[in-house]
Structures are given as C-alpha cells and as structure tokens.
Image (cartoon, rainbow, N blue to C red; front, side):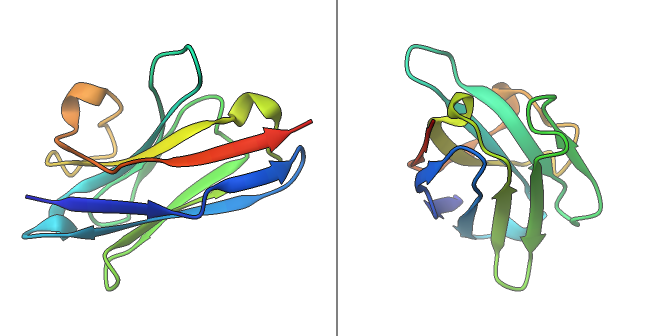
Length: 125
C-alpha cells in the first residue's frame, strides 16, 4: 500500500505560479514512478507529468511542457509540481498518483495503482 497526500493548491491569478507537493508513505514507495493528473469540471482526468522512481527521467503532457516542472526528493518521499505561467485553462483538481512501473513512460491512468485525494487549483483571469 502507498498513501499519497497532496498540498499546495489554491487560487492564483493568470500568469502566476504555484507549487504542488505530494508526500508518499508506505512500503517501497520510493520505487514507484510518481505522476500528476488533473481533472477540470465536466472533463475527463488527464495526464500532466510523471517522474521515474530515480528522478532521472520525466515526461510531460504537451499542455505542461515549458511551463510545469516535476521533481522529487526521495529522502523526503515527496514529489513536486512547479507550475508557472498559469492560465484559466489550468483550473482543475490535481491528483498525485503512484505507478509500480517506476517508469517515466507511465502516462496512462491504468498504469497507476494509488491516488491521492486531490488538491484544487483555480486560476482567475
């Protein structure tokens, strides 16, 4: 079992920044790839970014490239999502998730076995 707890969401103006954090606990949590997904109102949940267990490789959705940066601190069992140049289309509930594949190729929901409760990000225009 892996437990995930997100924090750092909130309300920000367009063009602003936020940093989300997700702390993992449980056996072997450091061997999991950690990813971020988001779900906007009325839309399906979508992939945002993932980082491999080692922190050595990452993948991003096209919408996140150049604006968002995913990183992890395995000593703290924490993954971060730094989000810059936010726009109203980024408004969503952001979920942290863990994949036993350990790989930054894990971009599909079905590859993730554990999910956090989500944190709301609202970007005002």
